[in-house]
Picture (cartoon, rainbow, N blue to C red):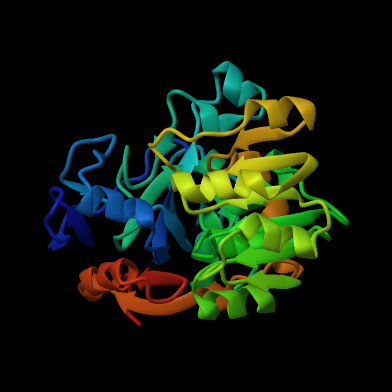
Length: 343
């Protein structure tokens, strides 16, 4: 089969022929329909972040496809049915997995990092992490569920705990933030989307934002937020991963408010402990999505509560995957997906 292989940081992906994966016991072989391109892929390619398994390696962790073949002992699937893979899954045995926090498993398996991912024509995966998709969900766009939608879904549902009537701000409306907007709106929250790109704010409006704010030229974003949400936001989601935006998100909170950090930031961030104590505020992080949350998420997508088709802005073939990486580098579009079988 053909696969786009990661050979090292600073080098483009190499399209090459590799042996077809053979499904082992309790594994499913999947013909990849689509695989999303994510900033995590660029962290390996451009920024020297090491993959969990040394290259050469096939990247790609947002994978949808159809069942191609079944390994021994697999009984829950039939060939040809549409399926989705989660970006990560746990060992199933540690205390985090057993308590439903599989995304914190110290032995976490990450497609496209610890094992070969979806920038290929075929992929094998354990039966227990293969999720069936209804035919009503377009199979190519469905790949976005695996991470671009599931990570925000977990952040909104379980970490930020946004619900009916909550006043929510989302700072950063890229591939993750835009889906925090729609997931929060789907749960009945009043959502303000904050981004420096007017085109992203327009999409946020389409996906449920009731307010938008371009902070360009605004001296105090927190004051602007509090003019709309009297007293501030009940929940602030930061989806960029920068010290200034995390601190700004915190400054926008109302009494009893909650900051949910979704963007990755390696810098030290300064937050006022006195406010956290005196106003009973919370600061929480959110990482990925436990596999137990995929079935209700897929149901919400099938019911039209969460949309995936508007998220797909660019489609590229496996041969043009490096062009797709360039689109992400240039910030063009919400989600570029790779179609291994061609456009």
